[in-house]
Length: 127
Image 1 (cartoon, rainbow, N blue to C red):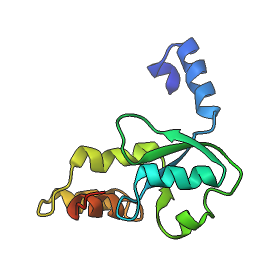
Image 2: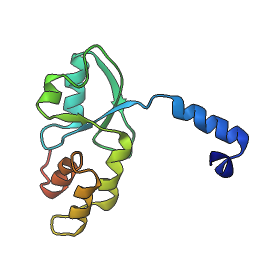
Image 3: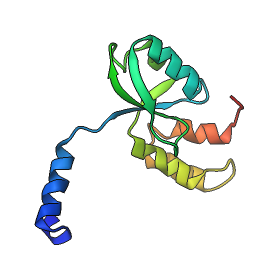
């Protein structure tokens, strides 16, 4: 199938890139924290990370960590969640508003992961 989409050399590169592990990314729960404060707290615990990119204000890419990233007190308190960077895009693209039909659709994108970004847009609080 891939050979119909790509040339043989492009197909080889594509398949090799798919074998590489994806980076660990966390999304800050802005209802409880902000990226700067969470980054500082996790850095103090020995986590080496950087912002996902200029397109996201809530994502951090984790390079390495001396503690399990899914067992920190910040994680257990709900200050961040493990989430792929691509999962940030639906709510950014839909920009759900408090009284629009788009909110219901965005909640259905991934019912366990999207309620917090939707709630953040609905209950905007300055940080």
